[in-house]
Length: 72
Image (cartoon, rainbow, N blue to C red; front, side, top):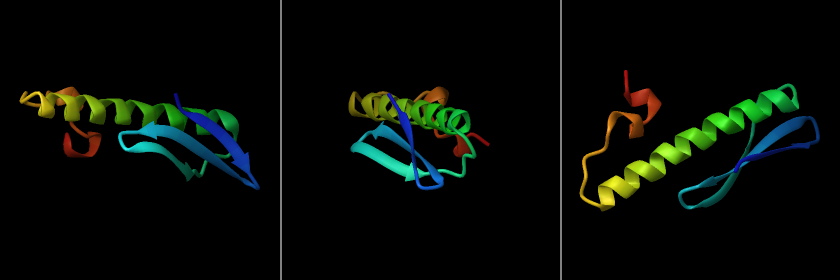
């Protein structure tokens, strides 16, 4: 589960990535914007973990597992 916190004037997002916990500053102006950004990151990480799992099992990745920017 992702979390958000404020340090100084910046909102930070912390989420569980494939290789461990990751955090980064956002351009969010308030907590709700930071939480929305965190939710998006969490969905992308879930898809990446699923694609990696399918690859390990010898399966072809499905469209839902491909990164959003490569779907164009």
